[in-house]
Every structure is written in C-alpha cells, then in structure tokens.
Image 1 (cartoon, rainbow, N blue to C red):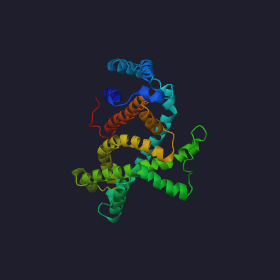
Image 2: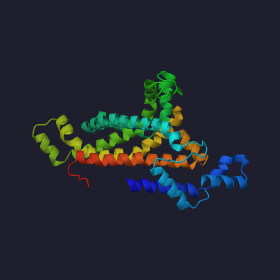
Image 3: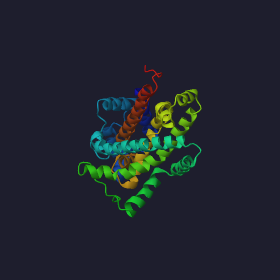
Image 4: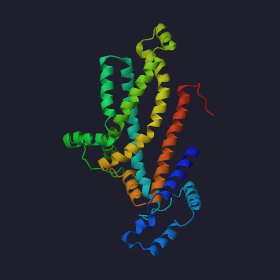
Length: 303
C-alpha cells in the first residue's frame, strides 16, 4: 500500500515535469517576460533539479505540508480540505447505495435464475450499465429536480449551513454514480451465486432439510461474497472518478471543479495533492477488502 502511494506520487510528479507548459507563464499570463518568468520560477523552486524538487515535496507531504497553491497563494491543505470532505461524502454515499442495491438484486436474480424476474433484472441492469454517470445525473435532474421538484438544481447548501439539506442534495448525485455500478455489482454477485449452485456443499445443505433461503444466506452467500468484495474494491476508483464528474452536473463544490481548474492553470501542488489523496483512499479501500477476505473466509491468512 505504501509503495503504491509512493509510486503514484512519483509518476504524478514526473508527469507534470515533462508535459508541455510552464506554471510561471500560466500565472503571469500576458505579463510574462523572460525576466519575470525566470524570477517566478526561482521563487516557486521550479528551476531546481527534478530529484531535489520531488524529495522536498515528498518530505513536506509526509509532514502534512502539501505546499502552496500557485494560483490561490494559500496552503493546499487549507484549499482542498472542505472540498475534499464534500467529494468523500458523495463517494461514501454512492458506495453505500451500491451495497444496498446490488446485494438484494444479485440474490433475487440468482434465486430466480432463468425466470422472468431474473431476466427483467438482467435486461434492466444492462440498460443502466450503458448509461454514463454524467448522463444519468442529467436524467435524474430532469425527473426529480425539474419534474417532481424534489430538489432545486444548483441549489447546493453546505453542511455547516444545513446538514439535512446538504445530505438531501447529495442523494441524486450519489444515485447517478451508484446505479450503473449497482447493476454491475449485482450481476457479478448473481453470477458468483450461480457458480456455487452445483457444488457439493450446496446439495449437502439441501439434503439436510434447509430451504432455499437457508442455503442462500447460510452457505452460498458467504462464499459468493469473496470475489464480489474484490470487485467492489476494484470499482472504488470508478466511484471517485464518477464523483468528480457528477459534481460538475449538479454544481457541487467538491474537488472536481478545483482539480480541473488547477490542471488547466498548471497549479501542480494542488493537482499532486488531490491525486495522492485519492490514491490513499483507493489503496485504503483495497486494504480493507483484504482484511474482509479473512473475515469471510478464515482459510485466507493475514501476513
């Protein structure tokens, strides 16, 4: 996990060192002259060797200092703290919705394999999987915002001003992210359960007098959840990426807006900090998935 975060930080730092463009020129704009550009590069430390700049940045980051934004001239941590919390709230809500939707759908589909209910779930899921999150967000805005008036599009309120209003406004964005992934996760769980059906331990469970619900919930589900947990951990980056995109559709002031503006303005400290923070979140979720394996299957050892 630590090596992955270090590798991503190095690759991110390297990418912004080799791509065309100059942060000093972007900051100065029309006032950029060779003398002013050189002076600003020296002030920002951009004229130092790559290895020195990376070592200094990494050392500061490990001490909790993410640097200073080139564009806003304030500490990066202060700049992204509130916005990152909004994006993380949206991400967590989306993930919980995926769990709440995909597990019941996967079980229902597997229990009625080949029947009308199974086919209906599979066809509906296939259609939903084909819809990208940003378009799903537009559809939900049209239906629940403009049609049913359940929320006001663009009427975002912060958690400090109205906690209930803040969480309520994030429901539709979270649903836009969760629906396609729920269809994918539900199908994955359904297929995992179907693969368990012909195994010997299932026939033994039925021979002992267990009904379908007892076999599914008491025996098959635990085994089928092991590959499903892996799949859920894999889609975490997609959930985070979906959050950043959907924020633009619903006008949510998360890290998506500041990330895009920082990339265009070559505000490297902000972009590097956000990328590393997202990497920590993703690797952390995979780490938790590894721990959960052990709980689901004691044969999986921890070392």
